[in-house]
Amino acid sequence: MSTDAVTGTDPVEDAPAVATLSYEQARDELVRVVGRLETGGEPLETSLALWERGEALAARCQEWLDGARERLAAAQNGSAASPESPDSPEDDE
Image 1: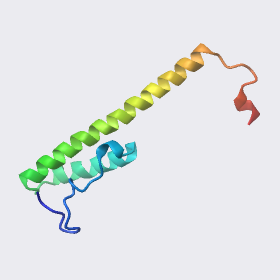
Image 2 (image 1 turned 30 degrees about the horizontal axis):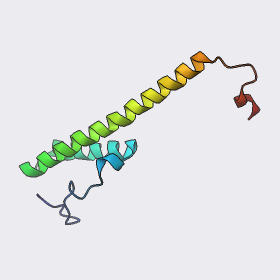
Image 3 (image 1 turned 180 degrees about the horizontal axis):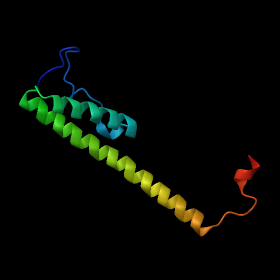
Image 4 (image 1 turned 90 degrees about the horizontal axis):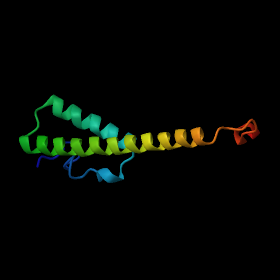
């Protein structure tokens, strides 16, 4: 695989494991990967590695978004099941 001319390391192999990334980290790296692929000029092997990394990053972002949707739905279902009383704890703050 090709190496990064600046650091001398492979930009895909040396990247952190996708499963450890926050949504923002995965999104930001995905933007960089897409930019590199759109620019072109990478050797085929590097392009394929970038594509695979991008797919994994996109899946990680989707996991975070799905989890957020589930949490919102649960919160909405919880508030619909128990209407707020006039003396809600939020009023005490």
